[in-house]
Amino acid sequence: MTSLSFTWDDLRPLTDTPRTGGVLRTTPEDFRVDEQPLYLPSGEGEHLYIHIRKTGHTTAHVMRELGLQLGLRPQDVAAAGLKDRHAVTTQWLSLPGKAERRLPGFALQDVEILETSRHGNRLGMGHLKGNRFTVRVREAAGTAHLAQVTLGELARLGIPNYFGPQRFGLGGLNAEEGLRVLRGESRLRDPAVRRFLVSSVQSLIFNRFLALRLERSLFSALLTGDMAKKHDTGGVFEVQDAGAESPRAERGEVSATGTLFGRKVKPLTQDAGVLEQEALAAWNLTPAVFSSRKGDRRTVRMFAQEAGVTPEDDGYTVTFSLPRGSFATSLLRELTGTDVDGPIPADVLADVPAGVPPDEALDFSREADVLPDPDTSG
Figure (cartoon, rainbow, N blue to C red):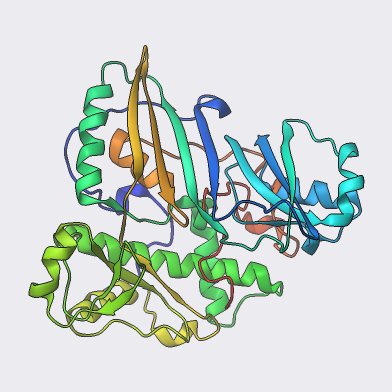
């Protein structure tokens, strides 16, 4: 059985061209994430929206502190997505309108409320367009031009839409426990934690499926039986004639999708299904074991928007926007070819959800710039 541990070395990059090298996250200010909301608050309604800037906190920690300090239930504080702890990030949160009178008393170091407004509904997980990133790459002097050339290639070919290591925890323990959940062997009872753990197994299979496509020069192509997604409208269709549809994929208009298995998503068929079965077989799994999940589809590639490079004395700063659900580290890996995640800090257990045994060391502290679970409604 293939290893459950996450390592970028197991996942083929898009190209084997020279990379810039460099070091990321020397300071939190080197990694900035600004949420791009799906909509802005209207200014009226029973829900209070607050726009925050935070440094050194997970979104979950800020949400808990808001609830504790303002006397709210945990479910009263909502976010559209989770933002990285080791960065400077901005995002909107929503609270019940009654919290407005207590909000001036809220205080948390390195968390700033930038503005407030009102809206008619609370935020829901996934209610964001994407994220805007500003990332400083240090110890890479003289490589800004190479970074710009690579960005041009990524704009033409797309970026492998891998799930990053935030899904898999320390040493792949999330996926290990997720397999135990699927087999009925887990002692964990918290439904949210169980869903997250199973999502790590879904992510593991997707990453393997995507890596196989890259290894076999199928990244920008389509196979008979693929479920392809239109990037402009989001429409999904089954590929009956790969030869006829592949030119659209080569132009970046459509992309193949991988299956996040669940009861409402059909496995791929024909040639694409053979590749998908190979990915499942790496862990002796079948689609049927994911019947507790609703399931979803994820494109095998993403495209960055408004990307650019600014030279710096010791390297460069890269800026780009990605759609929701995408990991910035997948793009940064293609640019730098180095360790884009860095070491997980010693205080990794600070934000482990209730019900997860500390000795399991499941890593929930390194939140991604994406949703925590691709199948939240399952």
